[in-house]
Image 1 (cartoon, rainbow, N blue to C red):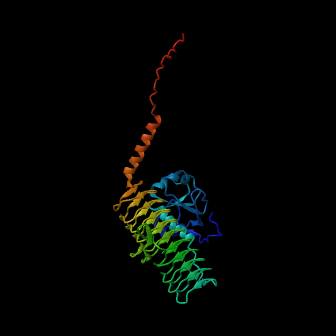
Image 2 (cartoon, rainbow, N blue to C red):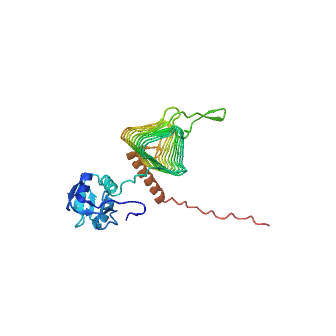
Image 3 (tube, one colour):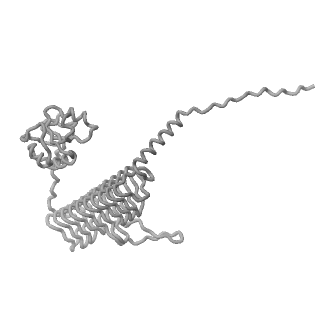
Length: 359
């Protein structure tokens, strides 16, 4: 059950309306069936709609009490009696649209909190919201309908398009944001990149003169950091999804639709093509090229270029099939070492040396 203290529900909605929304076929149910809420398979009750997209939960699906469920065509024969199905090829995506129908994103109320500090020459579009303690610097430009959370700092000259949502305690400087960008709490964007020159044992910071350029509809998770470029810009392509606690170095370029999972670090000047996926805790060294559609498994160490569409794993990374073979080989060696019985050495006893007799 969704907690009404935090989420406002709309509805109920007819099954045929939801089917049209997600372009699914109705199987085993009537279009006029009214649905009140979304719920997980395991806890759904009459009036709820759930989704089934992972064979690991087949038994849960078979016993679910949900009135309706979004599922793939091969799940139809396993559905419990009385359950209506919305059949489509991507149940999880369809469920996301249905859940958003029941729980649309809240629309911020336009308001400027009296404790917010806004430079005189900053430009705010219509219907913006600025919460308590937020700071908007000189020459900053915010598009219509932007929301700035408590104690967020928008630096001088920063520009963002319409409908951006900036969470609490975010800091943005030296950056240009597109429309519909979501920045979760604690994010820092546009700070100095990690660049220094060394001479005679002395490190000297290299001025970081670039920007961070973020495309439309990017989502940046809590406490992520994105350094500004050293000369070239750091670029985050349209529609990228960046998880919590990700570090993106200076001059990094992400293509469209990349997915970067938590605790990943991408070193400076590395370039990712479109729709690259990087698993959690992966590390990418600098000046690499990762081709479009490539996939990097969790905890991989990437120290070489990765071709378009290639799937790599391990540290240092290798093609994923090679990595699986390595894993099996190491397991076999460990098992052989554990079960091998060392040859026992038989010590031959020597007869005691006779002592000389005293006369």
